[in-house]
Image (cartoon, rainbow, N blue to C red; front, side, top):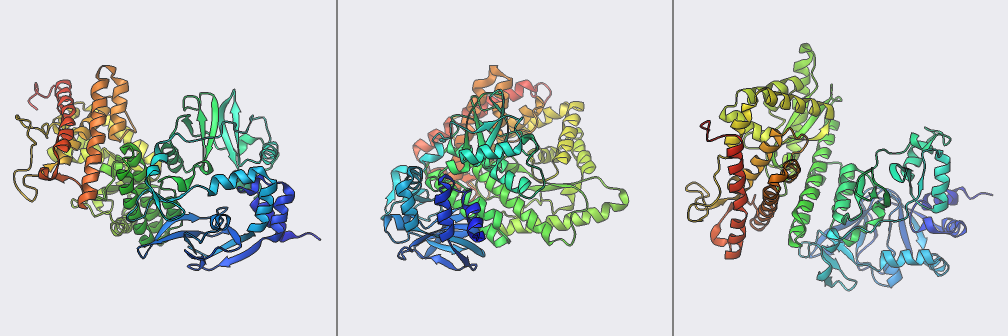
Length: 640
């Protein structure tokens, strides 16, 4: 008589390490001895300092949070969801549990006898290597209040030498990826994956990757009966693949996986799909608990069901930022990671808001981030700047449509405010009727600003030109962008006005190389790092890329990189601008974290001589880039 329960457990376990490398007989033996546990939400599986159970656990359904108690505060170290294994280390090492395991939601666990696993370890070298590799490393949390980014040793001693190293190390990827051609059927590809015991297969043509199939594809598209296994692999493969160069760092890999919502990266000779395949890097290859990374926050975000959870995640993101800055992680990596988390938080806030509406959106729409968030340069929590674009509708439907999106936008901005993003003092938000309009109205608005460049219009352009799509229909954004460039082409003198605006703040040093400080007001005698140092570089990068029709580049560093490619004769200057911007952005972030504010205004009396010299070293590129703009746009000749 068949043991159907054991067969179901077998079919589940075979998809996850280390069970996927067991012999069939070994795995079935485990499956027949598995105990199934149902854990109610907020109930513990085990607690910190408790003696180890004689079994470890793998999550079948639900989510288990691993928490470490420090200074009477429970710190989330990781979230285990489908296929994740936990609770084995203390049994192997015969130690007490270093963390508590609590159900974040109703969960079903498979409990496996450690004695049974030990029998298999003795006879299976691959499993032994997996256990050693996975459980002899230290556990790391980036969220500890007093120990950000450092490793917990087994005896609760911190190993400071390893902090933050893995982010900038080259990721270790599989150099022997399993491949097939597009002539294969899905069944043939699945058989190869089964024989090779891998969770993915790459489809190649002339040794270049053109697609990928994962276990998830087989579960969702084949096991459900939607597509026949007799079809070609091209029917279900994900294409194009996301590729990276072979020297990709762990941080870069994490950013790419987060950005594209994928679990595998193809490694090619030059990082493009057009060069030879070198390997594959999976999410499992990145040892999540061995480096500061946002993976646990993204897992939490996916499961968040209310705005309080989003606020909690944003607060932990600030702690993550602090840990990265302390470890001196490259600011570009930090900026990318924090921006991706901020964007994910915003997307979740939008989805929660849509769920609260009585009906689905009546037409397509797009939510835009503006300013520093639009440029993906928002590291510290600052004001929210956003806008909403909705599809053109018949005049008779306009009022209803706009009222719907205004209600939605108010829900979104209120949630963002609760999360920690203050309302914009100038009300540059999608909840403002002025910034919640149809596509045609946005086109008309931009055209008016460009063809009638008043001082207010130019100011608006510096804010709204740095938009980026956060959620919604990309075609609306593309059409709006095309309209902007068309208006600029038809009224080129607009760039001269934008150029004059880019020079509104002179170089930050006076004639005697003294810092130019505020002369009055709340910040008297303080140095305005944003207006006098960062904004001149931001404004210059925006102007220059607009002048050469470079689209879809909103980030200041990326804009200067594009200009360096376009104008080799000025490459050195643009690279100096990039270096200065990175230093200034890091400096502002550190100031903000130190003083618990935006980091905009700096009290020079609190800076050391070396800090002042480092800042002054960033100012020459500002002077040089402003001179280039003045000459290029003939601002002196035309009285601007």
